[in-house]
Image (cartoon, rainbow, N blue to C red; front, side, top):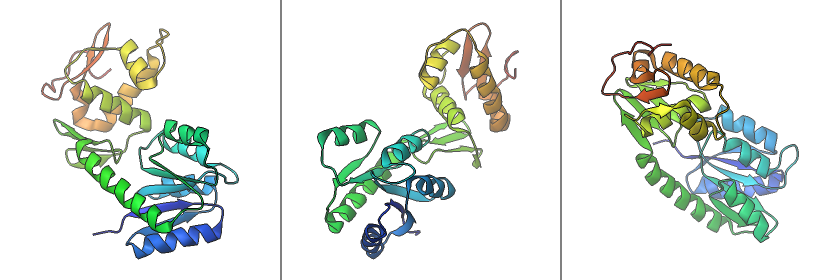
Length: 235
């Protein structure tokens, strides 16, 4: 079984070494980054990373900026490290989707225990985050889609759109509702954003793209039990 991979991000090399040594002894593989910019680069390059330990105060991009960027496309567990122990910092971290908040100085053994607990919890949640609709499987935790058993690369918004369709399978969804739920802003009368993404999503789903039915004058309906294309289904 492959070792879980932890991304450790801190501009202090001694701190990275300390954390790495304890994690390595506990059976984890460690990837290091010395600033926020390198952290994002390593995160997007390495698809096997299971958890991020992220310092707040760093050059180029600080921990908040890195967390905010990662949360646009991933729910990977994040532990924030900071020299500050102020309530406002903790509140900001949790609002950004931080899983754990540890103030420096800290016990490396406690840090490892937190890592183990979070990964156990993430593993339990991951099984509940897999949804199946016909020949499509969506793994929300890993942000992966399988069609007929093969992985399909989707953009973040395409993934969110497909997840929304599956969560609302069988329901007629107006463009206004889709735009509000997936794009998080009000409908202003321009349906091109949704229609363009639906067209790309259908194409990437191949033959299973006909699960997405066009409802003329309204929007779309996802139905994996009825894959017969409608008259406008492939527009």
